[in-house]
Image 1 (tube, rainbow, N blue to C red):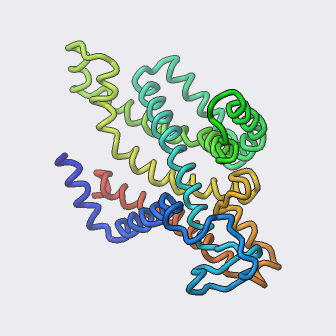
Image 2 (image 1 turned 180 degrees about the horizontal axis):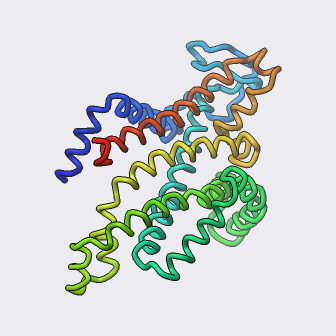
Length: 305
């Protein structure tokens, strides 16, 4: 607890990092609370307010179909929050950290097998791998979700967009674990030869307790920094997938599809405000996650204090 207090005290001195953390928190809260805070439903169309500029009634204006841009941005943030948090928690933290711990501590064939699989995935450009997986997995995942709806009590799950979330999350998980696993493996390789680990082995402490109770807490600093910077990459990749038509599908909004709708020359001439709100939010999220990661690195890395 004392270590966390000192770390937060040092982070509090990083004004830019704290500001970025607050910006991220506010944006994520807007997305999480969209069902209650959004002025309109994401697909509500007011044909008397088509292509309206920003006003007191429509803070960010309306689009070509009379839909409130601010409300759609809030719902789009919600999709980004769900996908990035699920991907980082499952791919980056659970899968990446676990494989890094096992690989670094066990060594030998286990280490070689995990690292070779990681190198196989890493040999593809990240965005290309994600695009290929998203494109090939979509029909299989959609058919599976439809089967669940037809054969279980989960009525209406197709309409919830579950298939879209699963496709994007699975595609992003495919590369999100690699960097984390390598980072944790490197930390464990340097820590497992220390005296306190040798002493724990000598007194018969179980492997699981050594990994979770001794090694992981001492490697947590770099993991937090990597997770923060990785969130920025996940946000950007999720937006690109939606922009390419491989992410969240209409009518559910996403920042990527909103940028696509506003990115044409004709739309820019007629409704330039359609690009402003989703563009600023996307830019702010990617930038703030990276700046927060830099601040956390300064706070948690002993070499930069």
